[in-house]
Length: 363
Image 1 (cartoon, rainbow, N blue to C red):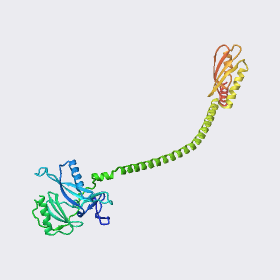
Image 2: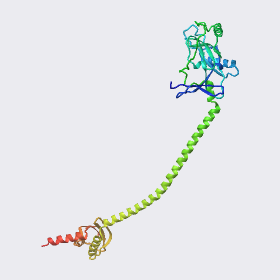
Image 3: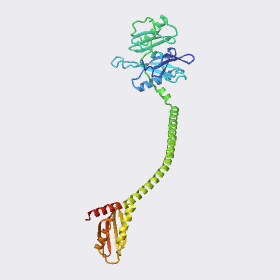
Image 4: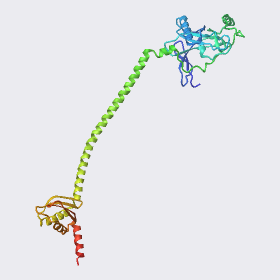
């Protein structure tokens, strides 16, 4: 199977001998040979978790000095059976080793189970006699060498005295067999002791410190990276600021020049302006009027004239219309001594064209 734990055994030098190659995912399980395990049957006070805890506590108190590992497997019993009220469990005791602080499993539990009857299993370091009832191991004995029929009879007799071999039909010595490893071993399994070891306060504190250190290093790295990036951006911003200020200064200068040119164009060219002023001087030279205010925009001329004597509007209009550089003359009087004159100022080319037209019209 793809997800199967790795099975190994510790040899005499406490080195790992692989029993089954590791799969893609799964814990490393140390198989404890049957020779290094003690087996017993224990009656449970119930099916609750507290009953199992009490049984494990009792087993630990009665265990041998070097047996610090315990594996308790309650029997699989049909609740409707007659003996359902009497719940038993198989208990293995074994010694762990400092070289492996992970998961342990007795050899018998790592092998494929039997349904009913007896069998003699050839194990890692000897032979194990087993008696099974409804898939539950009810009796077990280990021999370093293959047992004789007399040794097997002693095993069956002892089992019958405890009433666990009543269902054995054939008490004769069976042939020794090699039992393959189970394929349904849990991929990951943590018991309470294993969890207490993994999540000990010292290990939790070390893990928290490691996580905090990694987080601090990551945060410091990000801070330094961002600081250098911000410094680089500030340097580029300062360089762009100088260029931007220079561009804005040139833009303001260009806009000022454009405004100056626009105003100059609105006033007209020099010839047009001078011709208009010449026409005004011709008119004002014949009157006592003076210029109080003048404006010129897009060829439209507006003049405010003031005089000491009473002003004759028709005379002023006649004089202005007589000037070829002025067209569309209109005069408005603002009081007795103030005139507001509006006229269209013609360029020299327009003036010449108007004079030529007038000459052609005359007979």
